[in-house]
Image (cartoon, rainbow, N blue to C red; front, side, top):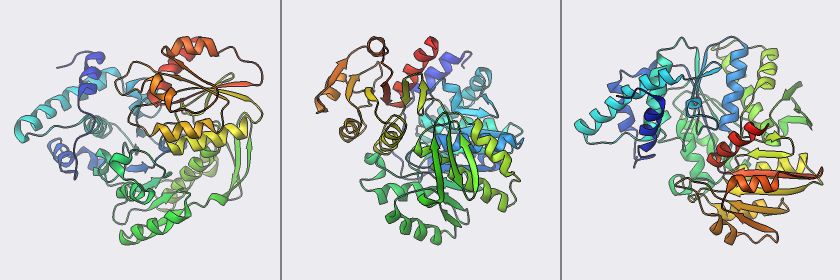
Length: 421
């Protein structure tokens, strides 16, 4: 049994991340052994390649503004492990986390001994969240899908509504090699008679979504790219949607899409009489939303966890909009299992020089390998992340340091930048 948070986190992080899954039978068994706590939750389920975390945060702050009790389940973490599971404005406490880890530790051993099966890391975290939220006085829980949708551990829930943010190439070894295959996996969260709201932008994918939702008798709303207008950038992101003016603290073109998705999900929940949220509370909630590591500025340094093609494409649009005419230096690293060849090529199209680095993490690709892939004229490599930042931090007025790549990398760097700020 665990008595301190470090041992509890160390154990759970030692568990295999993902298993071979052809159905959700292992997760369903685990839930049954726990008394099916997930069945008592009112869930908003969010999938997509990029933008899931921001959309979850928008929804959370809108609902909190209306004085609902709200839980969220997201991954990965940026600041501390506990932030994966939140209740209102607070992360799960160390004491609570230890309590639930001990419960799933016993469950893990029971399933291993009695059923000869291994509950994975992500399944264990999801099960902890089910029990934690079930024990709270809670109105809504917003679940971010971890990987894909169809076979994701969170997909044992029966949600009030589902949302899909975006579709691009990521985790192709699991989700498929085409956008349609990736989309169909994410559409797996759509249950019979459960409405879907999506901001998937590729019009060629819309017939696939419509066909799937028709088969599920799911009420569908696809947000068109032209429905948000008069976008302005500065200290805030301002835009007009359905004749209402909105303002975001989060920066970047893609945040407008995520905010519009959150708005429409709330509209739909209002229409279904699950919520009664005013336009004013939607506006205040959106403005109050903060999401670390997503186009986050520290003076003339920008942190952004763009770890796939979709994320890097959105980052390119934001940099070219907000920092036109600046000289862009980038500090970049990647996980070895990501499609970093294409990501680096895209990064090269909008920055002036790239500094490749690495950090101590088992999945991290080496700076040497990343450097060899790049064909940009000005490229450098650094074995030490923090030495690299010290060398690059003294920037001229028209220069920007863009630190991007893996979210684990962003988490590491952010802690250091917060100390210095």
